[in-house]
Length: 228
Image (tube, rainbow, N blue to C red; front, side, top):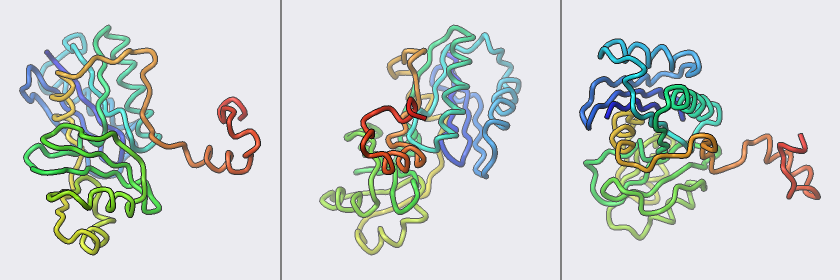
């Protein structure tokens, strides 16, 4: 199976081509770029490098969220368009799962910085999710994992290193970038998504919606999008 995997959920852009579990091409751009401009040229470059045509692809795997609202929309829209146009499978994988190195033992907690000392966090053991991805304050996350014997924080941990060291000195941490290769490998065996209703998994409302709801509590149960 020829698989194209892509992740534009945050600052890094990651794209990979995998065939039957074997890496054919892989590129990660760690610098902040406009993913809407960089994504398709990156895909085209890798496809040409390995001699694949778009019609060779059999599955598209995309980081479905959580993460940057704009980044997720770019990735999901591109993946859906390619899957629909080519008539092939579409699979969504957690953006947090793509941050988890498979060689780390114990509880692995991938985090994405959501600003204001909040994070998107996942909980993994042996590469498998043991609890649903969530959005919470980093203080709450530290309390939630306090009882575990071996904990490693991965992903966007730079801003939280001092808090980890102060609160859980026995815990480990490691900065990791999203792996499009791991996305592809996980996507090869994951359940196929329904194409038309496929959407990003944000886990929280956009800030503009939250502010609007605070100012309009009397109609907070109505759809923000509908009212606007």
